[in-house]
Image (cartoon, rainbow, N blue to C red; front, side, top):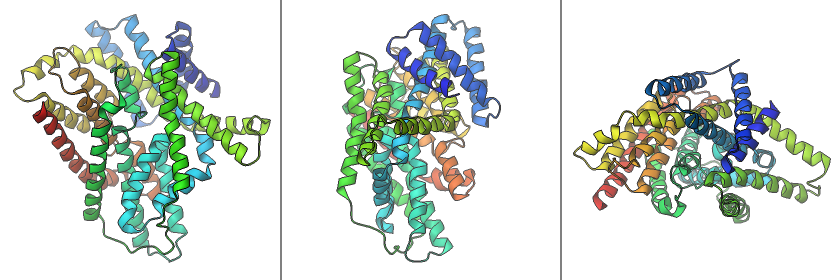
Length: 459
């Protein structure tokens, strides 16, 4: 299976760069091997995606839109998205043995009750750029270790409350990352639809919305959860050196992605596919040098490859999901266009921004049924960039897709965050989605609605 993972990654990079037929065929075969390995024990979400993929192929054939060119585009999209997921894993060998990451994370976690929610929200936002969704189990572990190391014995109720509030802050922080991150998954998907997309065009709006949502989340948290007393021994003094060092490492990701795109004259996705492996290898090599080992020694190289292979094996489910989502999202666009919803939207007697708001609400509802928000976000963006559809500001369209994807993770029963928190805290997923996350999502929707109405009024 390791060979299949590497084939998917390398062929995904190759088709993103040059679209070579040999890379498409070889990568497609490797992707089928990965999917076949998951058929032995598929979960509900994977089964649903497979059924959706087959249904899209049949429906596209029935509507007369299926063509060799469309299939090539669909396989290319699936390989590119799968390769991006694997590229994130190259960071893992360095992150897993990094004292720097743990020191920075514990600074955010070890705070008194009044500041812990804000600190965790900010910490997850910042470290989510480098760690992606793997920041969730990292912070959950740090919360558990911090409570175990408390100098004062904690009652079961206090421990439960702190872990619940911290878990809520972690999930909500991850949901905000797509709003401002230039390397989030939804931005990777949208980069193919907006070739001229610039980060600074939507960054001010995304950053402002994120700050507002942190404040809203803290307000909801106070209503949902009782307060707890401060824990003795908790550090409240920030440590700027490790934080600045980690921020410098994280800043390399978008910098290298931009440099690769300029040098190779390739698409935005190509730079992102190569940036994470470069940073991961350099980060690991720097750690080796810091402990007096040569990064090129057989022991270090074999250790890196073993850790990476184990990470690839552990992410088989996620890779399978991303491969299918990329495939389905490409097929769904021409099928969706056959419905001619653009004509219907143009005829509605309301501002297009408010129609967009309604589409986001509908897509959030679909995510509750387990339908991937990446697919619905792609369809919504494609719908509003069609010539016959009333146009909305591109920054609002990008932020709407990012908001939809991030906050769908809070209400979807198959989201990685909800499943991780459920496993760590021993709480049913339904309780996390409905009692913990739904009130916050409703408040976040209200804030997003105000932003949408502001765009409509200004335009």
